Length: 173
Image (tube, rainbow, N blue to C red; front, top):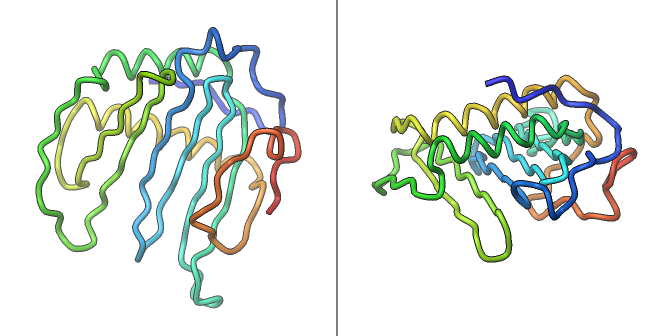
């Protein structure tokens, strides 16, 4: 899966809310004791990634936030991947977790009446979930090749806010 490159500090793509294949795709893959990564991709191509890590010197969780824009081809590839792997009909059995095991959750919102969240324990194998999860992790890695828009204390309540964080510049809070 290619999922085109990230472009820092550019305006959102030419996809409109009407033509975008989804409103948003989110990945929550963060552990309260170890940190992790969070990703929010909007249908117009805006990508917000957060990488959460423990800073031993500051004795607190810190975050690096990245804001970039995916080209329309990457948005289409992501939407096609979600469809190819039947995200909206995935059935993953629940079980008790193992201490310190990751539990990523992917949420896809197509429109106001069509959304789904799917979670999986990190040690379990599920090819369709893993394909989408792997593509989202690749996008986080690509975003990390751009300069962070913010580095500082982690705030679990932070969310991208349209109008205050639009590229370029972004929400520096």
